[in-house]
Length: 66
Image (cartoon, rainbow, N blue to C red):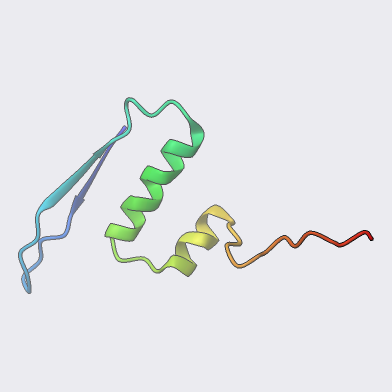
């Protein structure tokens, strides 16, 4: 899959960005590519977390059993 991001508009000139996922064999690599594409499109970290159902603010703490 090739993801093309064209951010050119009347207000500013930006490069066309291409993300090539043809050599991404891991599901995590594909997810990272899609996250990058969403980030480059201007989506916030919270929006991206909702898309992938991520909860980055969760912290696992080890319980002291002594």
